[in-house]
Length: 302
Image (cartoon, rainbow, N blue to C red; front, side):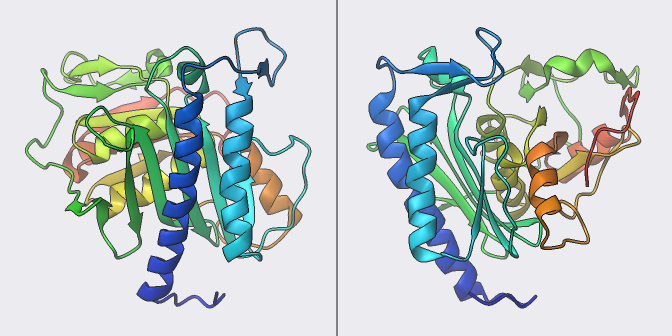
């Protein structure tokens, strides 16, 4: 694959097809483990928190195997990488969350997702997210996209609804646990819609792209939680702003810009945590000018 700044649409489509292949294979495995007895541990050592299951680890291995076969020069940045792993990334990085919403998954809640994105020099340009879906013959559906190619579920092109210019009551909205840490303009405190906390960032932003949620404020979460959603929402004619170091939601051009192929880049991507606001462009602009996070220290690594 070329490392030049220009990437052809045919190259992007080929990468997207490989990403979808990896997600499909992982989804078959993960679906087979849903509701079954699993080996579960805590990455932080705190009982009941930061859970990881054998299904998470094996799902990532499935995705990595597909990537390594088709793109051996690409680097994988996965949630289930060893915490002290050190890699020198090239221009191409796969940001992988093998099961986003593990706590939901191990508690037999179907609000979980498999998320895979390809970053080029720190910017998401390909993405696919699988979620369980009741009416699907394959136990779930995949939303897929690449830069310039639109967002799709099967043969259906996905466009984020632009009916409203600001949130309305009666429609669902994704909000974080930390909403109390925000300063909200008095005119919007009672008009954020029907609030939901889902427990899976990728699932939540899938629902924004699909029109089920009118907007979502998602995070704090990691690169692999957000990467696929960013390209899916943008190609669905939506907007997704990132919380900056001033506590304001603003444009996002990519992680660690200008990008460099250093060990430090991989380590910073692993440690990054942030928050995004997504929806149709008018709602995002409306909320971005009326919400501010109470920041006590610099915490975002761009």
